[in-house]
Structure formats: structure tokens, C-alpha cells
Image: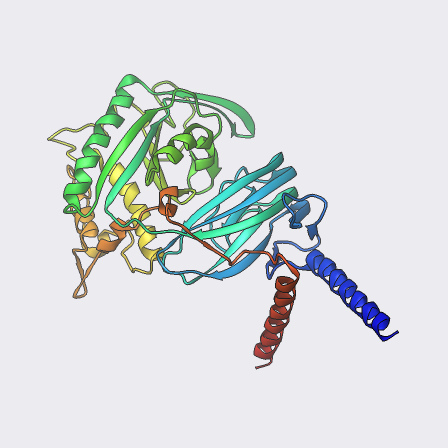
Length: 446
């Protein structure tokens, strides 16, 4: 009789553990924090029906336009490449902006992977980033975006993260893409207007000439602190979409050219991207799409610096023409926009650098023939004298390049995002979570 009772108690115990594991697996979010922009528009669940592998998937359902994500804070080593991957499935995902959708990101930043929208079956999504001067980051699996909102359903599964090795040399590879044609529909005074712009052979040759000048100029002006090589691609297919904001008006964003250039970018592991375009042609009587900017930098193509190089409004404009008497620095726009990326990178790595546009504050002026060449040279070599100090870009920033797949040739897989896979790990996870909640409560009371 005693043996039978023991068997019954063991059976009850096993059944209780089984039920506990089932319930815990359903409601366990593995210490991910659920965040939303607006409440009552999003449902978070662990889905045991729609999943990629044995583990329940993480489901985000936005019943209306919203920004929602699962996120987890992890420890990172400064100036180290990391790669996060997962599997994603989406259903009826649409966004209020083209850049919204299902994506991997770092919370409270614009750093993100490509986005997935519409209705698509399971596929792998990859996000690479450098920790820069951070020791912690919030990894997010998101439906929406930093400034975007989406609706629909996204399932995330099979999270992985690995650390890589920073390749610290000063040799940069640029991808330069010339789009001779733009064929877009824009809103003008409340009406849709088709704008069709095209470069001439002279336009393309001007861009070629100044890229070649830029390659030599940047090495010389930096005293060989940076060396570049570049590939030039002429994309004959017209750009079909164009971006807009109140500050810059119309411009070409990474999403506008992603389908045309991404295969080149991935294959060649470019460290910087230029897109050359014509945005106005007053001689041809076309609509002017932009205000008076020539270059527009400071953007990112999924972790890679990205700039627009716009041709002037007319071929009679000599801004890109070299002439000893009036313009010995026609490649200035290329240098200026790239320096915006180095300026931003420096600050993100924890360095203090002058604002690239505030040359007058430091006693510099624009020369009629050489432009701001003296300012850029001192800026790049940390030779700006101000209040007894020398300011400018730190020499180290020239070796801090974007993250690529080659950084993970000897990658180390980490367990930060791993799911509990057996009863022991589930029980350990449960007690760790209880302990964390107790610690958090004690901290709040203190």
C-alpha cells in the first residue's frame, strides 16, 4: 500500500511539473519587456500554434497603427561588433511610413535591421551593430519603428546573438551609385504631379571626376589617417520613390534605393554609400524637388553612412567644375558629407568634437576658390586651436568602420537570448525571475 501511495505522489509530482512547464512556457517571455507607444492597440502572446521551431513564437498583434516590441537589456563590450538574428513571419503588416514594419532594433535609437511588411512566411532577419562606447543595449524585436507605427501581426522566433571582432584599419571601401533618372509622383499644391528628371553625359562625368579627386584629397588632407577606394555603379533603372520631410524637403532615403543597391552593398561590404542624383533642372522647366542643398549627409543605410550628392539645378552652374581661377575644390561636397558621418560616429564613441558647420565660431571663413579646405584639414587632423586646446576628429575614429559579415568569421555565440529548453532550465529560469522581481521590489522600496 505504501508503495502505491508513493507511486501516486510521484505521478502527481510529475504531472504538476508538466502542467507548470506548460503554463510557464505559455506566459514566460524570457525576461523580455513588453513596450508600446499607445495602450489598448497591441496584444502580446506566446503562440504555440504559429511557430517556426519547437519553441512557442513571440507574437505581436497591433490592431491599429502602433509601435510595439519585446526588448531585453544585455551587457556588451564597448567597441565590439554584434549580430542578432531571428526568424520572422508577418501577416497584413502595413505602416504609416515606408520605414515601418517588423524589425530588430536597439531600443531608443534609430539603429535597426531592414523591415518586413505585408504577408510573408518565415524568413531570417539579421541586425548587425557596434556597441561603440556602450556597455548595455536594449535589443528589441519590433512591429513599428522609431518614428513609425504599424498594424498587423508579426511572429518572432529563434533568437540568436553573437559577438565578433572589430577590424581596425583605416582603409575604407565606398559604394558610389549614380542614378541618371528619377521618375516619381509628388504632391505639389495638393495635386499629384509626375516628375521625370535625367542626367546628361556631362553630369555623369562631373560626378566621376570629383570622385577621383575626392579619393586623393581625403588621404592628403588627413595626412594619410584614412585611405579610401571606391566602386562606381551607374543604375539605369529610374528611382520610383522619393522621401520628404519639412527640414530637407525631397531627398533620396536608403529605403528609396534599397532594392537597387543592396545586393552590391552586401557583396562588397561597403563602409560608406553615396547616391548621385539630379533633383531639379531649371533649364528643362521641370519641378524643383529640393531646396538649395547640394549634399545631404548624416543618414544611415542600416549602420553604414549614407549621403545624397545632388547635381546643381543647371549645367551652367560650375560648382562641380575644377578651374584654377574660381574653384580648386569641386570635390568638397563629398568630403563634407562624409565628415558628417565621422562627426556623428565620434560622438557615439564618446568623443567631443566641434560641430562641422560652426567653422566661423573657431575663426575660419570660406575662401572664394578653396571653399572651406583649411577648416576641413584642421578638423580632420585635430588642429583647431580654441581656448588653449586643439580640437577636431580623434585619430581613432578613422579605424572605427561599420560592421559587416566578415567581422563574424570567428564569431562567438552568446546565450543572452536563449530560451529554456528543458525542465531544469525552466525551473532555474522561474526562480531567477522571482529573484529579479524581489531584488527590483527591494530597490524600489529603498
